[in-house]
Image (cartoon, rainbow, N blue to C red; front, side, top):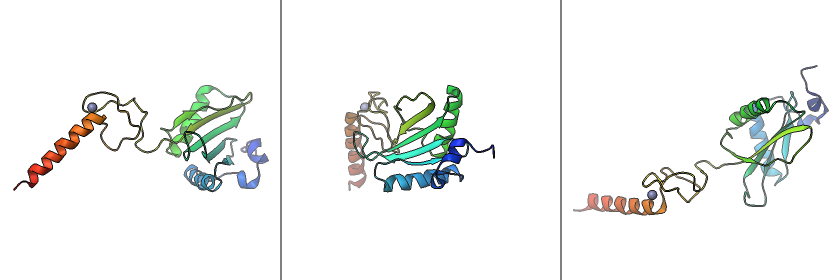
Length: 165
Ligand SMILES: [Zn+2]
């Protein structure tokens, strides 16, 4: 059975995963939620470790953290490609890159959940005036506070006009 990585064979039966990546993601999310901050993890047949936890303290409270690791050192390009496949399958391609503890004989990468519609504060220009927007979550159009206020007034005036007798 040379198809199986030694780390897969050495893992407890409940930590071995041979199903699909979407099903793995679902299982880990459910477990991570139930485990309140502890890592939920599985080892895949070719030796990758996939783990998820819900952060229970710090600035990223309640966000999920994803960790992908494998023993041994390959090329950075190979590792990046492997991670890309997981991130795409988990719909986590836009998550924030998080620091990993340094390890001598392991490749590891971590990410922190980015909420739907969330952008990096101060990095996205306002559609009205081009000034970077100060808020971190966009619902629809990117607008700075003053353009949003003006748009609100303009919209309110338009509605008043429509309703005028
Ligand atoms: Zn603006």
